[in-house]
Image (tube, rainbow, N blue to C red):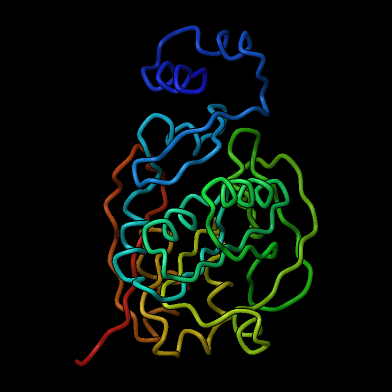
Length: 261
């Protein structure tokens, strides 16, 4: 009952929410439980950027998950840069016969993905590594307080980060060749500027007809390395219209493999 009241109060934007939050015995690290518009339930923080949009508007980047599930069927979905598991868990919830794998190198987000997965009673493979163009160890720059979704292996000079840590990275091609996971049918890549390195590390996957769809975040510029790699692999891409107030300077795209002429 308390969670329901706090959700409603926060969504309405009434003054005094943070005082009520403290009175309820909660702190900066506390969460509240909420069902999203697509069905599954998540533990969300009103103090975190993406979580707060989900609480207010029912989801975050609906256009992304809709592109994913429209092409997934009973195939394999890789969620590269899973954050707290919103799209991975929703895809599995909406396509229960699919196989879903979540990639996330941040220890904080790994805990949240696992808890949200268990909260919904779903089977999702969680890999606590990053994907890149070569295997090894890289530095993960942690997003600022309140926006862990900005964590990245490719830091931007104008961005501010709250810290950094070393994480393991692998290539998609190596993971498939070693039998760790199957080739994806659909893949989502949102890794804050490290997208083309992820694709560089999966040239064999990109050439496989099994991979039908790649949903990715990129600059609106057509001349990016990410888009070039997808064009070379036989994909045609188009932008996705945002459905929530999640707009920023980057754009979400869906790339689908070209068929025929």
